[in-house]
Length: 407
Image 1 (tube, helix red, strand yellow):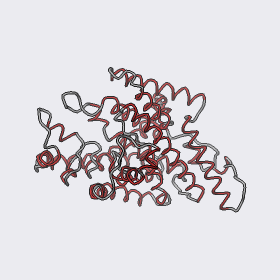
Image 2 (cartoon, helix red, strand yellow):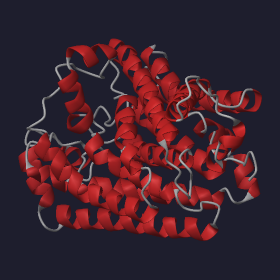
Image 3 (cartoon, one colour):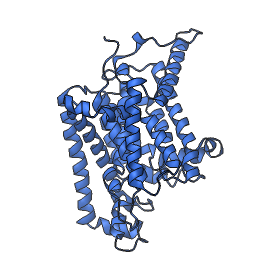
Image 4 (cartoon, rainbow, N blue to C red):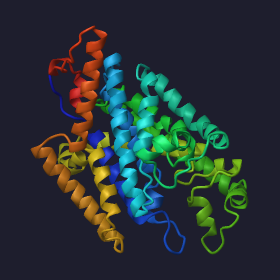
């Protein structure tokens, strides 16, 4: 077995595209001053964050054996340490986001819990994981709606912070599981789908083609059925009457179509709006994320395209660093009055930094920090399981091909 294999460029590019899409939603917001939906919200709202979560599952599959799951106590300890590190960064970012009054809804604390809940799933086969993903996409939205009345709501406003772990642990757990914008109970579907995809042979053109076909079919079918329900079977009127009864003006219809319902009634399950966490929203974004990843996997097989997308792939190789940096940048308030320029600076700065850092230093700074913590945790657990009192370093020869592939 070779000690090192190349990264899969398509996975990095897909992650990079998801990052830029999330940036656009955070910069331009969901609605224009006249209450019409922004282009960023219509194109990237919900889809980018879903892609981000799905590709996180792909990366998790790579670090636990790839096509042949190899999950021991050391691997589980590594994943848990990675999750806790990401959660710590996310909760720390909450202070900056709240102080600046940002409406970013930092996703990292949700990711941390997603990774922890994925521990029992790591040994499952791709087909089983795919079935779980589809099942959660249909069933989990109803469970989230049901549990919103049972689990405590958070006492804090805005993004969770380290303080809330101590002062409001029940509210924090309720926020992460069902009340937040990325309810983990439902979003586990994206992670399971990513794990399933990561267990496949992504170097095979046929695999990417099948994923593209399946993703487009799922995304288009769920969108079509929801459209029929909304526009032909009276669903939009029910949604307006029960969830958006206070919406007035020329864009009241747009608000019902594109704004996230509060979930006061079961009619919210008819919504296809970004982050509505309805079955239609979940299945559509699940299909969209799968199709985007597959399309990029196919495109990056072309040498010229792959080379042209190297800066985007570099950005996708350090998502934690760039996501954190963009939240801190937005928190400064720089260029708030010029969203077009603000977005251009974010994109150009991210691509330039990622390309230079990747060429000169390799792994992103926060990625290196988290990976080092995970590696030490895994080595300590393996040493403890073997009855050795000393902490053993992870030798390069012990890493799997998939780990080296996505280091």
